[in-house]
Amino acid sequence: MTAAEVSKTRAWLMAARPQTLPAAGAPVVVGTGLAVAEGVFAPWPALFALVGAALIQIGTNFANDYYDAVRGADTDDREGFTRVTQSGLIPPERVKLATAVTFGLAILSGIYLVYVGGLPILVVGLVSVLCGWAYTGGPYPLGYHGLGDLFVFVFFGVVAVVGTYYVQAAAVAPVGPFPTTIPPGTIPPEAVVASLPIAGLSTAILVVNNVRDRETDAEAGKRTLAVRFGYRFSRLQYVGLLALAYLVPVQFFVGWGYGPAVLAPILSLPYAVVLARTVCTRTDGDALNPALEGTGKLLALYALVFALGVTLA
Image 1 (cartoon, rainbow, N blue to C red):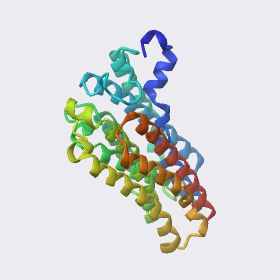
Image 2 (image 1 turned 45 degrees about the vertical axis):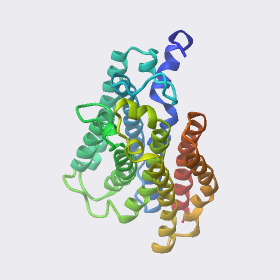
Image 3 (image 1 turned 90 degrees about the vertical axis):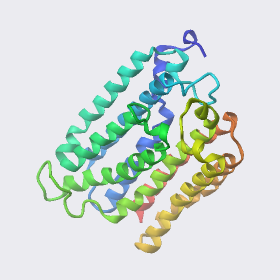
């Protein structure tokens, strides 16, 4: 695909990668669903959490596009979706500027959340932005040293879900603005456990990406877990992350006495099995690109059904 064949608007959409936005929205949906169930729902913190998560996701996508190109990880042999920097659709300096602007907007959108959630949200928010940039940028890019999976699991899973719940619980708690510590009861065990399926499925998206790009990443010196430990490890990792997602509703039902509605995500298990079969048997982009999109759809479906199930249960 050449620059002449793509409009500027389409090129920027390609750089933003809207197909990855379920990874930003899913934790907010689950955290908000749990907040409704626990009687601490607050609409404005929920909305700003969604905006901030989306901006961090897009900023990370811009950073990946730019730094993977300048570091040589993106080549013509790559089987993934078109990268605008490597393909020449957008000049590198503009993608780099877009990265800075988007992360700046994420910080601005977080001002209200800091007002509500205080020092804990300030620290978590700044670290999230820093790690989003450091995923492929900086002197020690996380994605190039096998730490990308941990980054996604922690920040797009645990931190995002727990943080979404926390800012709503803090907003209705009998504390003033900008608390310097975590108010009692604003991070219950249920919020942490509810984050695990989202963390697992978000990381599973990255696993598919890394399995597909294993050969080209190895040539570029990008030491993902798939490069370090091979296809078998990554396939077991993918299946394990999916298994984690489907065990959590059982804990809510059996361990904490939620109603049967909380088990609704298990209805998506057949789709997960189809995706796992593809990831466990294929390495080519023709099969794994749809599997990557499918895992994103699974994440979105799971998050919606889980949030609804928790609320009804």
